[in-house]
Length: 498
Image 1 (tube, rainbow, N blue to C red):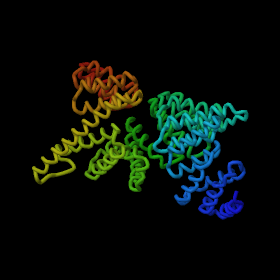
Image 2: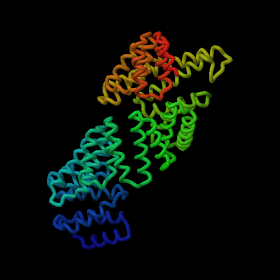
Image 3: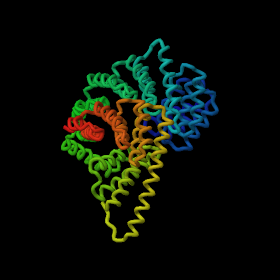
Image 4: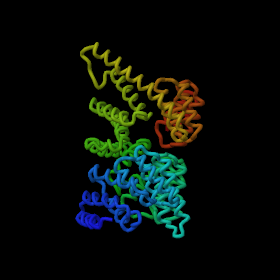
């Protein structure tokens, strides 16, 4: 082996000249005696990890030298690492697999494969498989490292939760992580998220409370309190939900979703001043982030900002309408298959259609121009109506998730209501209620559909259900009273109005 090359390598490393280091590594690799010199290879392994960014031709020289060698498991992993730098992902996968074939208990091989499968084009199921292999290997180890095991379980849980969208398996992984290392208390929060997705809200609430008992970190406490707010909202306990959102804001006053949710809660409770104040705070933060271009990092905010403009500003000006249109157009561009985006786009054109008919927002001197816009807007409205129906029906059919089915059935029912398609609306509200009898909007929507078709007995039944779910809702109470009145029960109508 070239002593000079080894000395030159050390000198290059000492001054951080990785280009020169790589050239000397290539010289050393060409020495046939290297295969028996573990110390020399150990040096090379340590150095090659720092070679990102060297010239492509130098990197290819290193790879060419390694291809000529009979590599053991450790060397195959180093070789695969270099291949990743050239984006030869298939070659890297092959060599990680070869390393595992040579040493089936090779943790490094499975770890690197898990990382590789998590990169585009991602294969998350394979990544999880590799992480769980790491767990199995470490469990068999005489020096079992529980912290390592917990870490890998947590990584697998995150992939199940965020990428594969299997909350049940994610929960199992997070629980296993806590079993092996309860000190990693963040897994209580992740368990809470999984339980929330599984609609086990009581268990999720208890788990998040444990998480809050264990953390003193300001950011973590804010996130935990916000999560409790969401959970109590889902449990139809708006007073507690509001309190937790307020506590979360004490830790992070820029938590825009907390303001957004508080605005909805106060509005439903008839506390319109508080609702307006919180909506205004949400507007402020959404507007600032939108101007700064931050929505590209979190596209859902396009939708939520548009929703605020519709719900709280009631689109009273042309500027409001233009911003609403701009936001939701941007949202459907980045989330083209989302049924909610299509529904909001339809709602926007529906509003414009009504505004033209009522001569709001715009005034026309030329009747021909008004007629042309009426036709264009109506055409767009019907186009997005069809798209919204299609996407929601597709979501209901193809997503075996009770939460999404009941949500989209309710949205689809509301869409049919807007066109007075009452039987279609009833069918979808019925589907939603068959999944979850506590769906307030589905019960209320079913009541409206029955009321509009003259079936006041059924309308009373469903409005009563909605009122039990949300006893503070003024609109539900008024709908129930109207149903009693139309059914001829004036005495009960008067009591309900009061």
